[in-house]
Image (tube, rainbow, N blue to C red; front, side):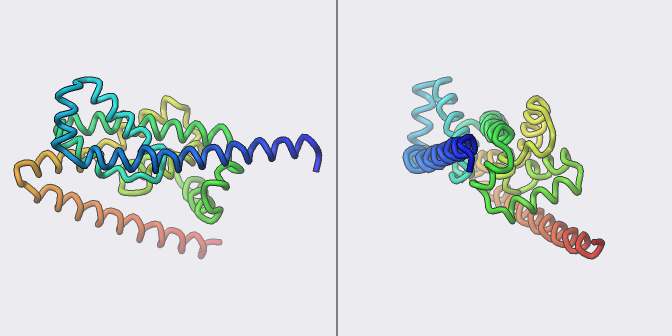
Length: 228
């Protein structure tokens, strides 16, 4: 192996290790305390009342790291935002910072490319996403992942396959993510008045949509194999 290739391999390995440690650190030292904090609605409400706009910024940073980490669940943050800020305001705040987190992942994936992503994802999963993107309209796939109950934060690392520039990526991600987030924030707002039906209905719809998408993708994959 040439010296240049060795240096490149070492540099890539260091970057991978750094990112892995960074993401694990986010989960253990930021993610778990964040979930515990926002899970105490009364304490968080008091914090918002005391800190004002600063509290919104802190909460937004929480959502940003949650989205970027790809290992911290977003539901507690969306529900808390709905409880404290209401359906619309909570959804806008969460969507804005979640979009920023997805965009950072998008830029990292675009910078280092497929060889880098193979360190983060199994090759078979990466190949399935590639086939889905290349066999369909890339922008449509982007919208589908962000709009439907699919692994949005994972897709963001592969988002550069869409061929979109950063501005287009930001716009599509923000707009397409909003309904999904609003479903939870609005449900949380209604749960304050003991109107649990909205949350139950939203959950049922999300599950049904997910099942429909899974069945469609499975049939599409089988059809593609037959056509080969």
